[in-house]
Amino acid sequence: MIQVYTSSVIDTTAEAVWLRVRDFNALPIWHPSIADSRIENNQPSDRIGCVRYFHLRDGGLIRERLLALSDYDFTCSYSILESPMEVENYVATLKLTPVTDGGRCFAEWSAEFDCAPSRESELSQLIGQGVFQVGFDALKRYFASRR
Amino acid sequence: MGLQRVVRSSIIDAPIDRVWSILRDFNSHDQWHSVVAQSEIEDNQYSDRVGCVRNFTLADGNHIREMLISLSDKDYISTYTIIDATVPLIRYVATVSLKPVTDGNRTFWHWASSFEAPPGIETQLRDMVAHGVYEAGFSNLKSFLSSGQLHNRSVETNKQASATGLSIQANAIRIRDYGLPTVMQYEAVTVPPPAFGEIRIRQTAVGVNYLDIYLRKGWIPDFLPLPGTPGMEAAGEVIDVGPGVTSLLPGDRIVYMSPVPGSYTTVRNVSVSSTTRIPPGISDQVAAALLLKGVTADYLIRDLGHVKKNTRLLVHAAAGGVGQLICAWANSLGALVIGTVSTQEKAKIAREHGCHHVVVSKNYQFSDAVHSICQGADVIIDGLGEEAREENFAALAKCGHWISLGQATGSINEISPHWLIQKSISFSRPVVFDYVSTQELLNERAQRIWKAYFDGVLKNPAYEEFDLQDAYLAHEKLEARLSTGSLLLKIR
Image (cartoon, rainbow over all chains, first blue to last red):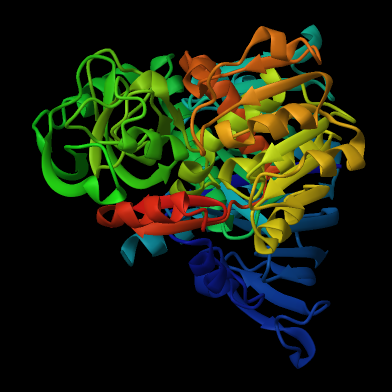
């Protein structure tokens, strides 16, 4: 089992960040690597068990199932059903926590998965930096530009 | 008592292992947190052993004992609980947890707790924990990490001590002749800056004591030369501190009892050694109502009376300010408490404060009643004086201890050893200020009073307030034996 953990501090409230990332169908709006997204079977995007169907900008198709969503803890967990990354048992969690000192947001994005041993470090780098950190950087830029 | 919850968090500009190396040490706070003056782990235990107990002495003199109940080097979490404290945090459990900020190699520090608070002071306690402990801790640890040393307290003291230094206009009660309550006149006065070892206080609540009446009447002229201002105790806020004072800062809330009269005033200077801090959860009014009377009850019960389980204790004026406290405290120690009062209404109050048997008498007749209840008293706390002298003697058991506290009916004169020998009686005539001759003694007694208050042994003291300029009304009421509980002078 491989674990990836990325965290960052975003200079706005956790509530404001949550408003932007809570919608399971909103990846193309805030994450620069995602081209489009829809929820399968016309389900609401906050219904636990719903599946998002989206494409990366490089064309890859990913399907992910919403496993948990908490407006109380600002947490969202999901698993990968289908992707070009050749990972198994992939479960990821995005979690926001208020930093009371300064009204900022501590953001964590973590994942656990299985893969071929030869691909461990490449995939850890891709997911931790190429997906999670890129997402955080986009959020930081977005909120910095709105101040 | 609702469950209170406090959560504070911050980002520390240091790698998580650096921050954790300090926070995982359960005994490190006195090195980096300005609130903690001293820390030690009890029984020479390791500070990372789950179950170890740390004993804090806070900078304000309070004490807290906390037990480590979980520690994780895997998750960077330390959880602890208060097991004994002089501050009213009940069932307090706190968790410190750290997480790495991978983006920048910093540390997210989360500090959360839940506890119960006595009614009415929930907000005050939450603020104290959130600002005074957690947020202060964040900034203290940040400066500790950047400078390697504790946030410098002496700089702050010097800066604030020089904030004023001018005389202050105030109002005070002045007495030019001894006599009736109306000799107390309300006048404008000037209060100079505090001298060496003194603090200047903006007072909010002044405690009225029977001693003030003796002074006004001129019974102890050496104590209050004329013209003078009566009053032995008050609570308020420190305005500024004189040279040599390092233990208090402007803005601190304190209460004092001073052998130098002069508390019937809006502003005054007192020696820092006669002051003690008011803990969070106690109002200025309660502090002023409790300090001198509580110290009196404390030394009478503990030092002189040696009151314990089954001690037969006779308390006169059992519904008065001191009487209520003695009844409640002695009751909690298991003594048999007998009180005398002048009216049925006061009898009810005495019973409510733990007096087991109440004798109602307007003419100081009580010895027969005491003998029928318990065959004589082991200890008498006597504020009556001369007119009750024969009755007190009769009420005492053999080898009894007669503690003559005051002289409401006039001073007891001519106690002869030949008289005492008939029953092997000990006779004491104490003065309260000799029992708080050092600040350590005062603090020790005050801590016991606050603890008894928070534990519910001493109930919320009933007090009646008068304006400072109406001090004569308070004296009239106290002298006419019309009051129950404590009398306070309030300052608007």
